[in-house]
Length: 237
Image (cartoon, rainbow, N blue to C red; front, side):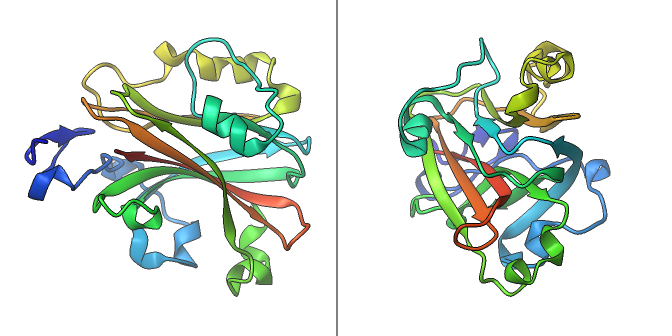
């Protein structure tokens, strides 16, 4: 493996090419305000940008890493299998209301691959009231890995989206799948995002790579509580 290659537009150097990084958001896109890594794991955060707010008025959300081609909702019996085979799943018990979405660039050790010292891109979405909850602030509410999807070949884009299932067929939501209208042009390595009234999406062009591991985490308000935060992360293999 070339230890002096480029990944996602940033020059990488190191032993055996073990450093793998996602491009940083442009400086002018960074916004002041509260974000998830202000309260926990501050040492893991490299950079972030605010995407915006969207609304969940049903308790069912659709998560996916695929913004190309027709939308398909898997009928697999478990969320873990949905994510493993298709990179998408349906989540129930979502907390309704306004959700805030950020793009986070974090250090790869948050995952469990010891071969990676670089960075990964995370779509981080949370209910607007999350930071007011004592269970989040004191650390008693934990993020749980609900599944992952591995692609062991060259991947052109790192994409992720969260939709309110009730509004999947609306025109404002359909615009997210029109990548030509908002995704980066070839050789544009900066992350792009699109917010709709009931959905959010990100995509980042990638230079030649050996594949991507996508991980999906949720945070619930207690053992049986509503889902109040979702994370979809991309790590280069």
